[in-house]
Amino acid sequence: MNHSINFWAVVPAAGVGKRMNADRPKQYLELAGKTVIEHTLLRLLSAEVFTAVAVAISEEDPYWPDLDVSAHKKIITAAGGKERADSVLSALKAIRTVASDDDWVLVHDAARPCITTIDIHHLIDSLKTDEIGGILALSSHDTLKSVQGDNVIVGTLDRSHIWRALTPQMFRYGLLKNALEAAEGNAAITDEASALELQGMQPKIVEGRPDNIKITRPEDLALAQFYMEHQND
Ligand code: CTP
Ligand code: MG
Image (cartoon, rainbow, N blue to C red; front, side, top):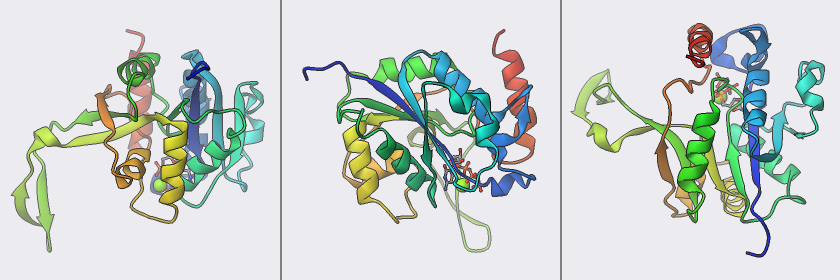
C-alpha cells in the first residue's frame, strides 16, 4: 500500500419507513429540533474522520434538497435503490473514482440518529488493522426462543452466540462493493456483513452502545429523544 487509507461514510436514506406509519419517510420526522437524517449526518461529520459522506436518496424524495446539510461540501448524493443493499451499492458507485479498494467504508443507517463519536472511533480503532472489517453489535439480554408453527417454542438458543447487528458496518471498499454486486437481488442480504458472509468471509463484531437505536416504529422517536438528552451527561 503506497497511499494513505481514507475513510468514507455511506448512508442509505432511501427507505419509505412503512413500519413508522407517518406522513413522510421517517428520516424526515423531527426529533429534538432537527430531522432524523440531519442528526445522523451531522454526527458522522463531527467525528472528523470521513473524506466524504455518500447519501443514497430516493429519486422521488422532495424533502432532501430543502435541508442545509444536502449542500455540505463533504456530502455526496446518490440515487436510492429498491432495497437497502441497492441503495448502499449506488452510494458506493458514486465514490468509485475517488475511493481505493483498500479504503474503509462505514455504512450507517440514516434511521440511527443517536450514533456517537465514541462508537464510531471504537469501531474504527478495533478494526483498522483487520483485513475484512466488521460491525457494531449488541448482545441480547433476553432469553431467546426458537418458535415454529402456531407460536410453539421448540428450543432455547444459546444467547452467548447471538448478537444483534447494528450500524456502522465497516468494510474495505473493494470487498464490500464486490460482495454487494455478487449478492444483487438476494433478499436475504439485509446488512453489509451478510453479503460478505455469503462470500465465505468472517466479519468481526465490536460491542456497541445500546443508545444507537434504529427508528423503526412510532414509539422509537420518544426513546431516541430521551437518549439524545442524556448523551452529554
Ligand atoms: N433504505 C434505503 N433504501 C431502501 C430501503 C431502506 O436506503 N430501498 C434505508 C432506510 O432509509 C434506512 C435504512 O436503510 O435508513 C434501514 O432501513 P429500514 O429501517 O428498514 O428503513 P425503511 O425501509 O425506510 O423502513 P420500513 O422497512 O419500515 O419500510
Ligand atoms: Mg426496510
